[in-house]
Length: 133
Image 1 (cartoon, helix red, strand yellow):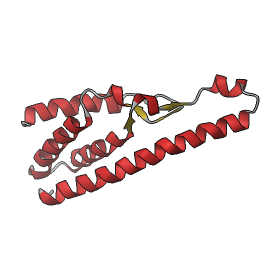
Image 2: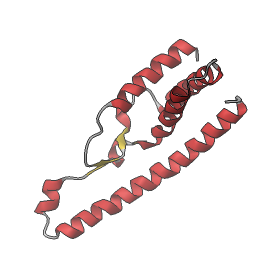
Image 3: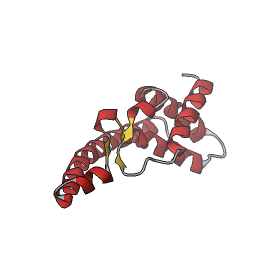
């Protein structure tokens, strides 16, 4: 992938990351991504290489790209995103158990996000090592 294409993809992805997150929701909708995760990862790697080898190196931009890479883990299939619906919880006979059940569902999504983040950390570390970044 050339640098111009990578910059375009990362810029479009960055717009999604800068949007105010939806409140009371666990995970981010995968359908919000402008490209598939692999394409975005490749673009970020191209940009990391460019920024990481530039003189002088822009550390803030380098770290921002790394964080953006890891944030891909928070984008989960739309059906896996768990919104908390206050009206439904308040309408339940047992508000406490209703909220507890929501948290249990969130725990499952969080576990997946943490596992995916761990894989992305390993991939990013290996990429940076292999490319002297």
